[in-house]
Image 1 (cartoon, helix red, strand yellow):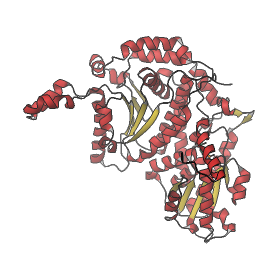
Image 2: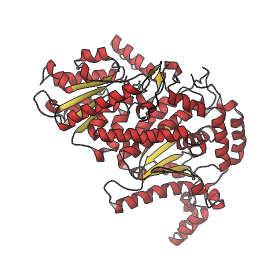
Image 3: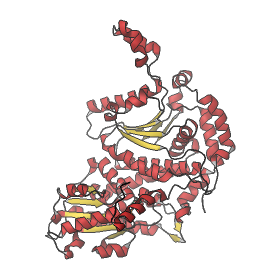
Image 4: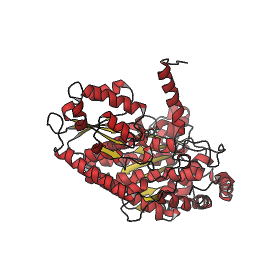
Length: 528
Ligand code: F6P
């Protein structure tokens, strides 16, 4: 069954939130913390190795209660059950949305068109495991009988961002295989990677659900031509494997049917790293780590499905995001990871959030009259502190931010990690509490800058009151990364339900593709 069609702005809860906003828009974080010494604890959730502190947001208990009523009124609970049970909630493509089934260890069957999808998932995981073991152990040999040293993932969008982000984020756990990712149709991108690899010892994983995506097919053909300069067509099957639903096209390319890993139409591209699309993850990190990633995601899935909404991490994060987008009129949200390993996370999340919720037509087929799909961006701390953070601290825009940090570093250097985390907390505190006129005045006095005091003072004030959420995780592991990604996936889902839009299609990316195709067919590039 489809998701209910509920215009959120027509609900009673929305009207109450609008009323409440007249007071809440004047909330001051300094005051809220002074008035309630327990605020940090009262607005924090501990779940497994995650601590989510959302106390530095412009909210009160009353705000949360009112947002929770909104969630009830749009029947979020019912929507979550439909999502997990395989209802065709991707109505515009007539598909179920079942990335949660990919990481489920439970025996509960999940039916799509009357067929349980769980057995195919298990079979595919076994195939990934066996293949990974052959390649990593060196049993899989290239055309000159040498073991594989390098793998190249050829794919774009969801067939690239997820595997690339996970491999980069977890490279501490990597095995000896070198992993490369080719996505862009820019030939220079392709040739830069080809420069680094040897055709005799490289395995190419072509990932394309449709096997028709222009970038991926062009890149795969260029690479096969390059490969055939030193090998023969009979060697293609030893060096190319594919993840796709389009078996005929893959076989035509020269790939052995045995080496095709399945994809399913009930897994969206941007939610597919948990399927065989994650083959490069398994090859780079080992199957055990790939499985731990899935198990971590499942923990968050279970939390999201079963926890009360007032203690439900993805639900609360979504509601707070709606509060900023639709009441404070914030345009964007930032994600700052205080781990250099997570440098690709914002790019990955941009597709998850913006391809999903960048929609202007509601589930009733009508133009929405309210904001949807906030702009997601970010970077890693502390680098970004020396870049755009000035704008967040003293600029005119309100940009709610998630700060993601870890209690422990992976190499265990305490000195570095203490400094890193001091910066992590300092940024969120500076944003929240700023520096008052009196504090700035005193500081200038202490510094002996009395003669310039009046002229400098306005520039030294930090207004503060800039919201953020701190997410502190024990340690970066495959399991906690799985939990983190799953947390954001469910945040995307809840936002889509509340905004009354369809989050799982992406027709908006088609027009540009069509125009480029027409230009290429007519051999005329319109430079207008
Ligand atoms: O960008 C649009 C899109 O359809 C994404 O959703 C998808 O992840 C990507 O293109 C790649 O598609 P395919 O896996 O079919 O090559």
